[in-house]
Each structure stands twice: as structure tokens, then as C-alpha cells.
Image (cartoon, rainbow, N blue to C red; front, side):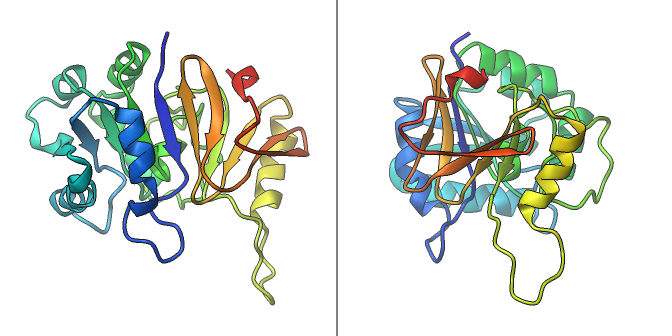
Length: 234
């Protein structure tokens, strides 16, 4: 299998415009592909047409045509014929619920396994892991299963930060991930920091972007950089 994955932490970094920081990574990842099928299902407070337009406008200057999967009569056929798959952020539970409802789990897995480029950010990255049990989102809807696309055999945590505001007594992200590790000591988690992404190409997995990331396993936390070969996780 020659999977081509670009799993971005976020759609913005700081005060940058929507997807501005990711355009060069997206363009490089798509190579000669000039049309993508966009999955807006993570959008809950924004309708799918508006979400698709927002993404299309953001990617217009890299000459990528964006077509929302909701505009197709047959979503499975849309994936089967897609040149590339783009999955946006929002609520991970709603996204996965809609993928199951539209019978898209296997279709996406098969298409990606055939070498079709996959790009996600936030929730769209989260579902590329084994399950959504390390998402940051509220379970506003119950999907058929927490099992996700399993495009990479690890758990993912986009937007990773361990910042805790002064005076806030809730758990940090690392504490939440530790709870997962206590119950799943043999499962790796990759924390993707905003501005960075996981990239899989030519059977090599690594980090891209200006910041570091983190790999968690059995209560241990490893700092990773763009020089760290993560292919052992595959």
C-alpha cells in the first residue's frame, strides 16, 4: 500500500487566514491533482454549502477545485471517483457518525489504500487514527462506533497543547491522555501541535511544519521533530 496522508493539526495558526499556513503543504501533497472531494460533515454550526465555499475560497490561489460530497447523489461513488479526499474540522463525533450513516468508512479506506491523497485537519485528522477516543470534542452525537478509519495504526490528538490557564482547575490535555494510556498502555498516541502535520508518503511517516510534536506511550512522552522518523508506528 502506498498511502498518501497529510494530517494537519488545525486550519489556522495564531491570527493567520483560514488554511493560509497549510496551503504550501496541501499543494505539495496534492502534486498534480487539481480537484478534491471535500467532506464537511464535521461542520455542525455551519452548513455544508458554506463550509465547502470557505474551503474552496481558501484554496483558490493554488488552483484546486473543491466539490462537497453532500452535492453528490451517491457519496460512495463520489469517493470511488475522487482524485483526492479532503476532510475538514469541527466535531469529530458528528463527522464519524455521518461517515457511518453514509457507508463511507470502507470506501475511504479502500481509496486511500489505492494511493489517493488524503488531507485532513482537526477532526479530519483525528478520524485517520484507530479510533476517536483521544479527540478533544464533546460527544454531541453517538456514532455507530468509536472505531475510525485506521489509516495509521495509532491514536491522534490534533491541537495538542498542555497549556492550563491560570486559575483553571480542570485536567490538562496530558492528564486526559494519561487516562487513556492507563487503560491502553500498548497504544501510541501522537500529539500534533498547531501549525504542524503528520505526513505519510512512500511508506515513511514523519512530522512537517515549524514546531515539534509528541508521541505518548504507557505514560511516557517523547518530543519529536521534523528529523524524527515515525515509520516504526506503521
